[in-house]
Length: 358
Length: 252
Ligand code: HEM
Ligand code: HEM
Ligand code: SF4
Ligand code: SF4
Image (cartoon, rainbow over all chains, first blue to last red):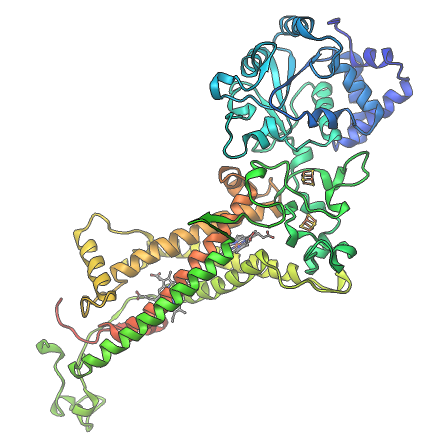
């Protein structure tokens, strides 16, 4: 390994025809929202540029990001990208294991110092000096820091690496911490989602490989091309939302008619992701299309924001849980009664002073 | 009773518009009237009050929409209108708020009262305590004031000015969900959402803000009505025609 091959070389080695290669370039351009004039540019880059190695580390995670990734819809995309990556290091996908695998990691780090991309799936737990996640006998956080030090850029795969996800949900006993709070000196691209959509993942990698730069990021570090709109903005049930037609319960008429899932807790209006455009499993469907609200899996702290079946979080205190409106109404009732009582007492005192002529 | 607010005699009505009437049954007195709320403040007050009512009603309905409608989606635009009204009122409220801030620099000293509290003045604390004692029925009456009394000013500052600003800031952040992260709303206010822990948290806090304002309005309307009847000065007419009448002119 570690020969300075181009992408095109890799593809040809994988038995991909020239025709398929050009098709792949057009497809990539379209997926990235680029015009047809970019196709030759992509093709040229892939033919001439030495490919950038990608090292893929795994911390505290469920591996759903990898599961999603290897199901990338376009087989070509999957083959190409996978061969580009697994050639180097990905401890769940690569053939080698143990010391052999760790040796590859060191080799790539040394050889391509400052040039490789680090992709992180999962996150490091910091409690007990990182002992809750051990890779090759050492805390994952050490491996992460070490590999990040020589990386050109870091990709945070999924909500775990981007925000913490389930292992960072309250009370977060292991102190699972998102990557950007541990690696402070590298550009970080967040690709949140639990998991992220396969086409989004391959799109991000392809962009970086092709153009040799980071995709344009939003304020939170997410690629704008996939995360600049909400599920709600492109949801095909949106006309029902605007009309005022909602599913009130999962077995009602509205549910059968495919009304908007807002009232049963859909988080589409607060979730930035590409599900309602790209969809899942080769564009087959996405949660809302199969009748369940979005749970907001690509948003920060989505485990801690209340029920998936209620719009807003409840407040708890004094041993009770209630919605903001219930508490608000109760408070309004108490205040109203208080004011009425105050008015009554005021009237009485005033009646007593009537003679004073003031 | 001080000398100056004593009841007038028939003779003293001579040469006035009341000449020929009997002073006693009219309880005629000579008292001071001051011009306190200038026209822009009054106009702003009532426009703001109306917009808040619309904002609270539509905001509540955004959170808990009315029962589902049936029929073709294309024949209704219910949530669309609710949100449209919310945003229209939000713009009126926000532009008004900015205008009110500008007026604070141009208007009289009373136009600045709702934007800060004179915490460093001993008098403020004393007046605040006095008002509280009046509301607890311990003291009979507080001193007269030209602008807002210390308790009113405190409530206005926290529950209206700060909460109103909070609603504008979080509201425009939420608004940028629709207009896009590259819109001016997104650029100026978009950071609020990640800072508050995410889009949903901003919704949550914006929703809570409504309840703070609703409670404030209930208390506000009660207290201004009560003060208008029971205190030593008029209030509601001060907010409609600008002039505040004192019911006595005893020094405090
Ligand atoms: C949503 C409803 C309302 C809001 C948000 C509101 C807000 C305010 C604010 C911010 C002020 C301070 C004005 C300034 O100094 O610039 C004020 C004063 C005042 N408001 Fe309202 N108001 C509301 C409704 C009402 C209603 C319904 C009445 C009449 C019954 C009323 C009567 C007054 C009066 C009399 C004052 C002057 C108080 C004083 O002299 O200390 N307001 N209000
Ligand atoms: C005092 C003033 C205001 C009150 C009482 C108020 C109240 C509310 C409430 C209760 C909600 C529903 C929140 C939820 O359950 O998710 C809401 C949503 C919203 N408000 Fe306000 N609001 C106020 C001012 C503003 C302002 C100034 C803006 C600025 C544009 C604004 C923009 C929004 C937006 C964009 C939403 C979300 C709409 C949606 O999710 O479709 N609000 N407001
Ligand atoms: S189903 Fe969800 S995402 Fe779709 S329109 Fe309704 S609230 Fe928005
Ligand atoms: S629809 Fe929502 S919850 Fe489902 S995958 Fe997309 S972002 Fe995550």
